[in-house]
Amino acid sequence: MTELYACLYAKEFPAQALLRLRPELRDKPCVIMDGQPPLQQVCSLTRKARTLGIIRGMTQVEVETFSTATILSRSTKEETVAKMALLECAGAFSPRVEEKFEDGAFLCAIDIAGTGSLFGPPESLARNLLNRVKTLGTIACIAVNHNFHAAVALAKGMASRSRIKVIPVGDESAALAPLPLAVLDLTEEQAETFDLWGIRTLGMLASLPEKELIARMGQAGKHLRQLARGEMPHLFQPTEPAFTLEEHMELDSPVEDRSALLFVVNMMLDQLVFRATTRVLALASVSIVLNLEGGMTHSRTVRPALPANDRQLWIKLIHLDLEAHPPQAAVLALSLTAEPGSTSKVQLGLFSPQLPEPVRLDVTLARIRAIVGDGNVGRAVLRDTHRPDGFRMEPFTVASSSVLTAPSPQSRSAIRKLRPAEDVSVTVQGKHPKEFYFRDKHYLVEHLYGPWLTSGDWWNPVLWGLEQWDIEARAKDNAVLYCCLVRDQLVDRWQMAALYD
Image (cartoon, rainbow, N blue to C red; front, side, top):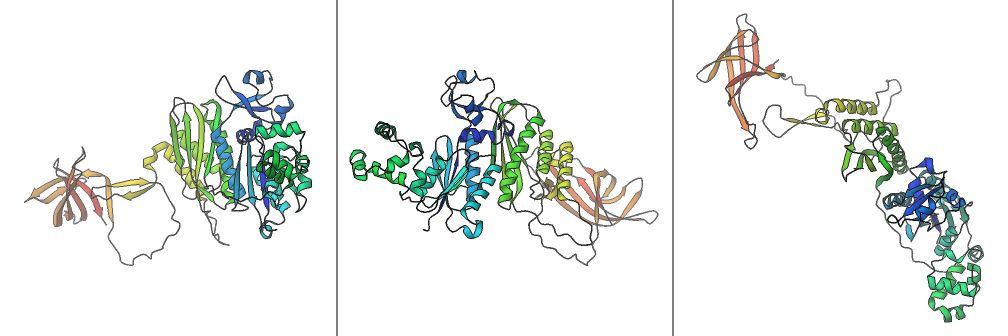
Protein backbone atom coordinates (compact mmCIF):
# COMPACT_ATOMS: atom_id res chain seq x y z
CA MET A 1 0.00 0.00 0.00
CA THR A 2 1.24 3.48 -0.88
CA GLU A 3 -0.67 5.35 1.84
CA LEU A 4 0.85 5.92 5.28
CA TYR A 5 -0.31 8.50 7.79
CA ALA A 6 1.01 9.72 11.13
CA CYS A 7 -1.62 11.39 13.29
CA LEU A 8 -0.36 13.94 15.84
CA TYR A 9 -2.80 14.47 18.70
CA ALA A 10 -2.42 16.82 21.69
CA LYS A 11 -5.06 16.63 24.43
CA GLU A 12 -6.14 19.59 26.56
CA PHE A 13 -4.75 21.97 23.99
CA PRO A 14 -6.08 25.22 25.60
CA ALA A 15 -4.11 24.35 28.74
CA GLN A 16 -0.99 23.28 26.85
CA ALA A 17 -1.05 26.44 24.72
CA LEU A 18 -0.96 28.58 27.87
CA LEU A 19 1.60 26.48 29.75
CA ARG A 20 4.13 26.18 26.91
CA LEU A 21 5.45 29.66 27.81
CA ARG A 22 4.86 29.16 31.54
CA PRO A 23 7.15 26.24 32.44
CA GLU A 24 6.90 27.01 36.15
CA LEU A 25 3.20 25.98 36.08
CA ARG A 26 3.50 22.71 34.15
CA ASP A 27 3.89 20.58 37.29
CA LYS A 28 1.04 22.31 39.14
CA PRO A 29 -2.73 21.78 38.98
CA CYS A 30 -3.98 24.37 36.49
CA VAL A 31 -7.45 24.97 35.06
CA ILE A 32 -8.43 27.10 32.09
CA MET A 33 -11.62 29.14 32.37
CA ASP A 34 -13.64 30.16 29.31
CA GLY A 35 -16.59 32.50 29.02
CA GLN A 36 -17.66 35.90 30.24
CA PRO A 37 -17.62 36.56 34.00
CA PRO A 38 -19.40 35.50 36.12
CA LEU A 39 -20.42 32.61 33.81
CA GLN A 40 -16.93 31.22 33.33
CA GLN A 41 -16.52 27.45 33.21
CA VAL A 42 -13.60 25.04 33.05
CA CYS A 43 -12.80 24.24 29.42
CA SER A 44 -9.41 22.55 29.91
CA LEU A 45 -7.27 21.34 32.79
CA THR A 46 -4.05 19.52 33.56
CA ARG A 47 -3.66 15.97 34.82
CA LYS A 48 -2.87 17.08 38.39
CA ALA A 49 -5.96 19.27 38.42
CA ARG A 50 -8.03 16.26 37.37
CA THR A 51 -6.62 14.20 40.24
CA LEU A 52 -7.90 16.85 42.65
CA GLY A 53 -11.43 16.18 41.47
CA ILE A 54 -11.87 19.11 39.09
CA ILE A 55 -13.86 18.35 35.95
CA ARG A 56 -14.88 20.28 32.89
CA GLY A 57 -17.89 22.52 33.23
CA MET A 58 -17.18 23.59 36.80
CA THR A 59 -17.75 27.25 37.57
CA GLN A 60 -15.05 29.50 38.96
CA VAL A 61 -16.71 29.51 42.38
CA GLU A 62 -16.46 25.72 42.49
CA VAL A 63 -12.84 25.74 41.33
CA GLU A 64 -11.86 28.30 43.96
CA THR A 65 -12.72 25.76 46.65
CA PHE A 66 -9.53 23.91 45.59
CA SER A 67 -6.87 26.11 47.15
CA THR A 68 -3.92 24.54 45.29
CA ALA A 69 -5.41 25.00 41.80
CA THR A 70 -4.09 27.80 39.55
CA ILE A 71 -6.79 29.52 37.51
CA LEU A 72 -5.96 30.93 34.04
CA SER A 73 -8.15 32.55 31.42
CA ARG A 74 -8.36 31.03 27.96
CA SER A 75 -6.43 32.84 25.21
CA THR A 76 -7.45 32.14 21.63
CA LYS A 77 -4.47 34.15 20.39
CA GLU A 78 -1.98 31.93 22.21
CA GLU A 79 -3.80 28.83 20.95
CA THR A 80 -3.56 30.10 17.37
CA VAL A 81 0.18 30.78 17.73
CA ALA A 82 0.77 27.36 19.32
CA LYS A 83 -1.25 25.67 16.56
CA MET A 84 0.81 27.39 13.84
CA ALA A 85 4.02 26.30 15.58
CA LEU A 86 2.88 22.66 15.67
CA LEU A 87 1.79 22.69 12.03
CA GLU A 88 5.12 24.21 11.10
CA CYS A 89 6.90 21.47 13.09
CA ALA A 90 4.87 18.76 11.34
CA GLY A 91 5.61 20.33 7.96
CA ALA A 92 9.32 19.77 8.52
CA PHE A 93 8.76 16.00 8.06
CA SER A 94 6.32 16.13 5.15
CA PRO A 95 4.84 18.92 3.03
CA ARG A 96 1.45 17.17 3.10
CA VAL A 97 -0.21 18.01 6.41
CA GLU A 98 -3.97 18.06 7.01
CA GLU A 99 -5.43 19.78 10.05
CA LYS A 100 -8.63 18.45 11.61
CA PHE A 101 -10.62 20.72 13.88
CA GLU A 102 -11.17 19.36 17.39
CA ASP A 103 -12.71 21.37 20.22
CA GLY A 104 -10.19 21.46 23.04
CA ALA A 105 -7.52 19.40 21.24
CA PHE A 106 -4.98 19.71 18.45
CA LEU A 107 -5.17 17.11 15.70
CA CYS A 108 -3.33 16.87 12.40
CA ALA A 109 -2.42 14.04 10.06
CA ILE A 110 0.85 13.84 8.12
CA ASP A 111 1.27 11.91 4.91
CA ILE A 112 4.60 10.16 5.50
CA ALA A 113 4.49 7.77 2.54
CA GLY A 114 7.93 7.61 0.92
CA THR A 115 9.80 9.32 3.79
CA GLY A 116 11.59 6.17 4.92
CA SER A 117 14.80 7.02 3.08
CA LEU A 118 14.95 10.42 4.84
CA PHE A 119 13.75 9.70 8.38
CA GLY A 120 13.96 5.94 8.64
CA PRO A 121 11.10 3.66 9.73
CA PRO A 122 7.84 5.17 11.05
CA GLU A 123 8.92 4.58 14.66
CA SER A 124 12.02 6.75 14.18
CA LEU A 125 10.05 9.48 12.45
CA ALA A 126 7.42 9.52 15.18
CA ARG A 127 10.07 9.64 17.90
CA ASN A 128 11.89 12.56 16.26
CA LEU A 129 8.62 14.41 15.73
CA LEU A 130 7.62 13.95 19.37
CA ASN A 131 11.00 15.29 20.52
CA ARG A 132 10.54 18.44 18.45
CA VAL A 133 6.99 18.88 19.68
CA LYS A 134 8.18 18.47 23.26
CA THR A 135 10.79 21.19 22.67
CA LEU A 136 7.92 23.48 21.69
CA GLY A 137 6.41 22.85 25.13
CA THR A 138 3.61 20.49 24.03
CA ILE A 139 2.92 16.89 25.06
CA ALA A 140 1.34 14.82 22.28
CA CYS A 141 1.01 11.28 20.96
CA ILE A 142 1.35 9.81 17.47
CA ALA A 143 -0.42 6.91 15.79
CA VAL A 144 0.76 5.54 12.43
CA ASN A 145 -1.37 3.48 10.06
CA HIS A 146 -2.15 3.09 6.38
CA ASN A 147 -5.75 4.21 6.95
CA PHE A 148 -6.29 7.88 7.69
CA HIS A 149 -9.34 7.52 9.94
CA ALA A 150 -7.83 4.56 11.78
CA ALA A 151 -4.74 6.62 12.64
CA VAL A 152 -6.95 9.47 13.89
CA ALA A 153 -9.07 7.16 16.07
CA LEU A 154 -6.01 5.38 17.48
CA ALA A 155 -4.37 8.70 18.40
CA LYS A 156 -7.51 9.97 20.12
CA GLY A 157 -7.95 6.75 22.07
CA MET A 158 -4.32 6.26 23.02
CA ALA A 159 -3.57 5.88 26.73
CA SER A 160 -1.84 8.73 28.52
CA ARG A 161 1.35 6.73 29.18
CA SER A 162 1.89 5.53 25.59
CA ARG A 163 3.10 8.09 23.08
CA ILE A 164 3.75 6.13 19.86
CA LYS A 165 1.68 3.40 18.27
CA VAL A 166 2.34 1.89 14.84
CA ILE A 167 -0.34 -0.48 13.53
CA PRO A 168 0.63 -2.77 10.59
CA VAL A 169 -1.66 -3.32 7.62
CA GLY A 170 -4.51 -5.67 8.40
CA ASP A 171 -4.44 -5.16 12.18
CA GLU A 172 -6.63 -2.04 12.15
CA SER A 173 -9.82 -3.78 13.25
CA ALA A 174 -8.16 -5.55 16.18
CA ALA A 175 -6.41 -2.37 17.32
CA LEU A 176 -9.59 -0.28 17.10
CA ALA A 177 -11.86 -2.81 18.82
CA PRO A 178 -11.19 -1.82 22.48
CA LEU A 179 -11.52 1.91 21.83
CA PRO A 180 -14.66 3.71 23.06
CA LEU A 181 -17.17 5.28 20.69
CA ALA A 182 -16.05 8.71 21.90
CA VAL A 183 -13.14 8.63 19.41
CA LEU A 184 -15.68 8.97 16.59
CA ASP A 185 -17.43 12.22 15.76
CA LEU A 186 -20.91 11.06 16.74
CA THR A 187 -23.93 13.29 16.86
CA GLU A 188 -26.03 13.40 20.02
CA GLU A 189 -28.72 11.31 18.34
CA GLN A 190 -26.24 8.66 17.20
CA ALA A 191 -24.60 8.51 20.63
CA GLU A 192 -27.99 8.10 22.31
CA THR A 193 -28.98 5.33 19.87
CA PHE A 194 -25.81 3.32 20.47
CA ASP A 195 -26.18 3.81 24.20
CA LEU A 196 -29.69 2.32 24.05
CA TRP A 197 -28.36 -0.61 22.03
CA GLY A 198 -25.57 -1.21 24.54
CA ILE A 199 -22.80 -0.46 22.02
CA ARG A 200 -19.81 0.89 23.92
CA THR A 201 -16.68 0.14 21.86
CA LEU A 202 -15.64 0.20 18.22
CA GLY A 203 -15.35 -3.60 18.22
CA MET A 204 -19.01 -3.93 19.17
CA LEU A 205 -19.96 -1.45 16.43
CA ALA A 206 -17.83 -3.27 13.83
CA SER A 207 -19.53 -6.59 14.63
CA LEU A 208 -23.02 -5.28 13.82
CA PRO A 209 -24.58 -6.56 10.56
CA GLU A 210 -24.11 -4.00 7.83
CA LYS A 211 -27.54 -4.33 6.17
CA GLU A 212 -29.47 -4.13 9.43
CA LEU A 213 -27.38 -1.14 10.55
CA ILE A 214 -28.06 0.68 7.26
CA ALA A 215 -31.77 -0.10 7.56
CA ARG A 216 -31.90 1.61 10.96
CA MET A 217 -29.39 4.47 10.57
CA GLY A 218 -29.01 4.95 6.81
CA GLN A 219 -25.68 5.54 5.08
CA ALA A 220 -24.33 7.20 8.23
CA GLY A 221 -24.45 3.79 9.91
CA LYS A 222 -22.41 2.28 7.09
CA HIS A 223 -19.79 5.02 7.42
CA LEU A 224 -19.56 4.55 11.17
CA ARG A 225 -19.11 0.79 10.73
CA GLN A 226 -16.33 1.38 8.20
CA LEU A 227 -14.64 3.78 10.63
CA ALA A 228 -14.85 1.19 13.41
CA ARG A 229 -13.26 -1.46 11.16
CA GLY A 230 -10.55 0.86 9.79
CA GLU A 231 -11.83 0.58 6.22
CA MET A 232 -13.16 4.09 5.58
CA PRO A 233 -11.41 5.76 2.60
CA HIS A 234 -10.32 9.38 2.82
CA LEU A 235 -9.53 12.18 0.37
CA PHE A 236 -6.46 13.88 1.78
CA GLN A 237 -6.74 17.69 1.83
CA PRO A 238 -3.37 19.20 2.75
CA THR A 239 -3.09 22.65 4.24
CA GLU A 240 -0.28 25.10 3.52
CA PRO A 241 0.18 27.34 6.56
CA ALA A 242 2.35 30.41 6.08
CA PHE A 243 5.73 30.36 7.79
CA THR A 244 5.51 33.07 10.45
CA LEU A 245 7.82 33.38 13.42
CA GLU A 246 5.46 34.78 16.02
CA GLU A 247 4.87 34.23 19.73
CA HIS A 248 2.15 35.79 21.88
CA MET A 249 1.52 35.76 25.61
CA GLU A 250 -1.19 37.38 27.70
CA LEU A 251 0.04 38.13 31.20
CA ASP A 252 -1.93 37.06 34.25
CA SER A 253 -1.59 40.52 35.82
CA PRO A 254 -0.23 43.92 34.68
CA VAL A 255 3.58 44.01 34.71
CA GLU A 256 5.63 47.16 35.23
CA ASP A 257 8.95 45.60 36.24
CA ARG A 258 11.23 45.42 33.22
CA SER A 259 13.17 42.40 34.55
CA ALA A 260 9.96 40.38 34.86
CA LEU A 261 9.03 41.39 31.32
CA LEU A 262 12.42 40.32 29.99
CA PHE A 263 12.00 36.94 31.71
CA VAL A 264 8.91 36.35 29.56
CA VAL A 265 10.67 37.67 26.46
CA ASN A 266 13.52 35.21 27.10
CA MET A 267 11.20 32.21 26.91
CA MET A 268 9.49 33.52 23.79
CA LEU A 269 12.85 34.13 22.10
CA ASP A 270 13.87 30.57 22.95
CA GLN A 271 10.90 29.29 20.94
CA LEU A 272 11.59 31.63 18.01
CA VAL A 273 15.25 30.64 17.85
CA PHE A 274 14.39 26.93 17.95
CA ARG A 275 11.82 27.27 15.16
CA ALA A 276 14.24 29.26 13.00
CA THR A 277 17.08 26.81 13.62
CA THR A 278 15.00 23.84 12.48
CA ARG A 279 14.71 25.53 9.07
CA VAL A 280 18.42 26.48 8.97
CA LEU A 281 17.52 30.15 9.32
CA ALA A 282 18.44 32.96 11.67
CA LEU A 283 16.55 35.91 13.12
CA ALA A 284 17.16 39.03 11.05
CA SER A 285 14.93 41.31 13.15
CA VAL A 286 12.60 41.02 16.13
CA SER A 287 9.56 43.24 16.66
CA ILE A 288 7.98 43.45 20.10
CA VAL A 289 4.45 44.79 20.57
CA LEU A 290 3.30 45.55 24.12
CA ASN A 291 -0.40 45.93 24.92
CA LEU A 292 -0.62 48.48 27.71
CA GLU A 293 -3.27 49.47 30.18
CA GLY A 294 -5.73 51.95 28.77
CA GLY A 295 -5.80 50.36 25.32
CA MET A 296 -2.43 51.73 24.20
CA THR A 297 0.26 49.77 22.35
CA HIS A 298 4.02 50.14 22.40
CA SER A 299 5.97 48.61 19.51
CA ARG A 300 9.69 48.48 18.85
CA THR A 301 11.86 46.71 16.27
CA VAL A 302 15.43 45.54 16.83
CA ARG A 303 17.58 44.78 13.79
CA PRO A 304 21.29 43.94 14.19
CA ALA A 305 23.83 44.19 11.42
CA LEU A 306 23.80 40.43 10.75
CA PRO A 307 21.10 37.77 11.34
CA ALA A 308 21.84 35.78 14.49
CA ASN A 309 20.39 33.04 16.69
CA ASP A 310 22.19 34.07 19.86
CA ARG A 311 19.40 34.39 22.42
CA GLN A 312 21.56 36.38 24.85
CA LEU A 313 22.32 38.89 22.11
CA TRP A 314 18.64 39.44 21.38
CA ILE A 315 17.82 39.77 25.07
CA LYS A 316 20.52 42.39 25.50
CA LEU A 317 19.44 44.36 22.43
CA ILE A 318 15.77 44.32 23.44
CA HIS A 319 16.72 45.29 27.00
CA LEU A 320 18.73 48.29 25.83
CA ASP A 321 16.00 49.33 23.40
CA LEU A 322 13.32 49.18 26.10
CA GLU A 323 15.55 51.19 28.42
CA ALA A 324 15.85 53.90 25.80
CA HIS A 325 12.12 53.72 24.92
CA PRO A 326 10.26 52.46 28.01
CA PRO A 327 6.50 51.78 27.86
CA GLN A 328 4.33 54.43 29.43
CA ALA A 329 2.00 52.05 31.31
CA ALA A 330 1.81 48.54 32.71
CA VAL A 331 2.01 45.69 30.20
CA LEU A 332 -0.99 43.39 29.78
CA ALA A 333 0.18 41.26 26.82
CA LEU A 334 3.13 41.08 24.48
CA SER A 335 3.84 39.67 21.02
CA LEU A 336 7.16 38.88 19.40
CA THR A 337 7.42 38.66 15.62
CA ALA A 338 10.71 37.76 13.95
CA GLU A 339 11.82 38.17 10.37
CA PRO A 340 13.86 35.18 9.15
CA GLY A 341 17.21 35.61 7.47
CA SER A 342 20.06 33.50 6.22
CA THR A 343 22.65 32.28 8.69
CA SER A 344 25.93 34.13 8.55
CA LYS A 345 29.12 32.34 7.53
CA VAL A 346 32.57 33.37 8.72
CA GLN A 347 35.76 32.11 7.06
CA LEU A 348 38.66 31.98 9.52
CA GLY A 349 42.29 31.57 8.62
CA LEU A 350 44.71 29.12 10.18
CA PHE A 351 47.28 31.73 11.18
CA SER A 352 45.33 35.00 11.15
CA PRO A 353 43.87 36.21 14.45
CA GLN A 354 40.13 35.88 14.95
CA LEU A 355 38.21 39.06 14.26
CA PRO A 356 35.88 40.54 16.91
CA GLU A 357 32.37 39.13 16.80
CA PRO A 358 29.81 41.35 15.04
CA VAL A 359 27.34 40.85 17.91
CA ARG A 360 29.62 42.82 20.23
CA LEU A 361 29.43 45.78 17.86
CA ASP A 362 25.63 45.56 17.86
CA VAL A 363 25.50 45.66 21.66
CA THR A 364 27.95 48.58 21.75
CA LEU A 365 25.92 50.53 19.21
CA ALA A 366 22.75 49.81 21.16
CA ARG A 367 24.33 51.22 24.32
CA ILE A 368 25.49 54.34 22.45
CA ARG A 369 22.04 54.69 20.88
CA ALA A 370 20.42 54.59 24.31
CA ILE A 371 22.61 57.56 25.36
CA VAL A 372 22.67 59.84 22.29
CA GLY A 373 19.43 58.83 20.57
CA ASP A 374 18.41 56.70 17.60
CA GLY A 375 19.03 59.38 14.99
CA ASN A 376 22.65 59.92 15.99
CA VAL A 377 24.08 56.42 15.50
CA GLY A 378 24.65 54.64 12.22
CA ARG A 379 26.12 55.52 8.88
CA ALA A 380 25.73 58.84 7.11
CA VAL A 381 23.76 58.80 3.85
CA LEU A 382 23.67 61.86 1.60
CA ARG A 383 20.31 63.41 0.86
CA ASP A 384 19.21 64.44 -2.60
CA THR A 385 19.94 68.12 -2.00
CA HIS A 386 22.67 70.75 -2.44
CA ARG A 387 22.21 71.99 1.11
CA PRO A 388 25.44 71.83 3.14
CA ASP A 389 25.60 68.88 5.52
CA GLY A 390 22.49 67.40 3.92
CA PHE A 391 22.64 63.83 5.19
CA ARG A 392 20.68 61.42 7.32
CA MET A 393 21.65 58.59 9.63
CA GLU A 394 20.77 54.99 8.81
CA PRO A 395 21.44 51.81 10.83
CA PHE A 396 24.52 49.82 9.95
CA THR A 397 23.74 47.01 7.52
CA VAL A 398 25.90 44.37 5.90
CA ALA A 399 25.05 43.65 2.28
CA SER A 400 24.61 40.00 1.30
CA SER A 401 26.97 40.45 -1.63
CA SER A 402 29.45 43.25 -2.09
CA VAL A 403 31.67 44.04 -5.09
CA LEU A 404 35.20 45.08 -4.31
CA THR A 405 36.46 47.98 -6.44
CA ALA A 406 40.13 48.66 -6.88
CA PRO A 407 41.24 52.10 -5.64
CA SER A 408 42.04 54.65 -8.29
CA PRO A 409 45.78 55.33 -8.66
CA GLN A 410 45.07 58.99 -9.50
CA SER A 411 45.85 61.36 -6.62
CA ARG A 412 43.15 63.81 -5.66
CA SER A 413 43.07 66.79 -3.38
CA ALA A 414 41.34 66.32 -0.07
CA ILE A 415 38.89 68.75 1.47
CA ARG A 416 38.60 69.19 5.21
CA LYS A 417 35.27 70.64 6.26
CA LEU A 418 35.19 72.84 9.31
CA ARG A 419 32.42 71.89 11.73
CA PRO A 420 31.22 74.35 12.74
CA ALA A 421 32.21 76.82 10.05
CA GLU A 422 34.36 79.72 11.31
CA ASP A 423 33.43 83.36 10.81
CA VAL A 424 35.86 85.45 8.74
CA SER A 425 36.16 89.14 7.95
CA VAL A 426 36.14 89.66 4.17
CA THR A 427 36.82 92.77 2.11
CA VAL A 428 34.79 92.77 -1.10
CA GLN A 429 35.77 94.60 -4.27
CA GLY A 430 33.45 94.47 -7.26
CA LYS A 431 31.32 91.77 -5.61
CA HIS A 432 34.45 89.60 -5.36
CA PRO A 433 36.36 88.84 -2.15
CA LYS A 434 39.63 90.81 -2.21
CA GLU A 435 41.18 90.01 1.17
CA PHE A 436 40.16 88.43 4.45
CA TYR A 437 41.28 87.68 8.00
CA PHE A 438 41.30 84.05 9.11
CA ARG A 439 42.59 82.87 12.49
CA ASP A 440 44.31 86.21 13.23
CA LYS A 441 46.08 86.16 9.91
CA HIS A 442 45.66 88.45 6.89
CA TYR A 443 45.38 86.90 3.43
CA LEU A 444 45.29 88.45 -0.04
CA VAL A 445 43.28 86.62 -2.68
CA GLU A 446 45.39 85.62 -5.69
CA HIS A 447 43.00 83.31 -7.56
CA LEU A 448 39.32 82.65 -7.06
CA TYR A 449 36.69 80.53 -8.72
CA GLY A 450 32.98 81.14 -8.44
CA PRO A 451 30.55 82.10 -7.30
CA TRP A 452 28.35 79.02 -7.12
CA LEU A 453 24.90 79.95 -5.93
CA THR A 454 22.66 77.41 -4.17
CA SER A 455 19.34 77.88 -2.43
CA GLY A 456 16.27 75.86 -1.64
CA ASP A 457 13.68 74.61 0.84
CA TRP A 458 11.40 77.56 0.24
CA TRP A 459 8.52 75.45 1.53
CA ASN A 460 10.12 75.06 4.96
CA PRO A 461 10.28 77.67 7.73
CA VAL A 462 14.09 77.64 7.53
CA LEU A 463 15.32 78.94 4.17
CA TRP A 464 18.89 78.80 2.93
CA GLY A 465 20.82 80.56 0.18
CA LEU A 466 24.58 80.32 -0.17
CA GLU A 467 27.32 81.83 -2.36
CA GLN A 468 30.43 79.65 -2.53
CA TRP A 469 33.98 80.65 -3.62
CA ASP A 470 37.07 78.46 -4.05
CA ILE A 471 40.04 80.67 -3.26
CA GLU A 472 43.84 80.58 -3.38
CA ALA A 473 45.20 83.21 -0.97
CA ARG A 474 48.65 84.19 0.30
CA ALA A 475 49.72 85.69 3.61
CA LYS A 476 52.55 88.16 4.24
CA ASP A 477 54.87 85.29 5.21
CA ASN A 478 54.17 83.66 1.78
CA ALA A 479 52.01 80.97 3.38
CA VAL A 480 49.49 79.76 0.76
CA LEU A 481 45.94 78.90 1.79
CA TYR A 482 43.52 76.91 -0.37
CA CYS A 483 40.05 77.27 1.06
CA CYS A 484 36.34 77.52 0.43
CA LEU A 485 34.54 80.69 1.49
CA VAL A 486 30.77 80.75 1.84
CA ARG A 487 28.50 83.79 2.16
CA ASP A 488 25.02 83.41 3.60
CA GLN A 489 22.97 85.60 1.28
CA LEU A 490 20.06 85.92 3.71
CA VAL A 491 22.10 87.51 6.55
CA ASP A 492 25.21 88.63 4.56
CA ARG A 493 27.60 86.54 6.65
CA TRP A 494 30.99 85.18 5.49
CA GLN A 495 32.31 81.90 6.86
CA MET A 496 35.26 79.59 6.22
CA ALA A 497 33.57 76.30 5.21
CA ALA A 498 36.51 74.05 4.26
CA LEU A 499 40.26 73.83 3.67
CA TYR A 500 41.95 72.05 0.77
CA ASP A 501 45.14 70.03 1.26
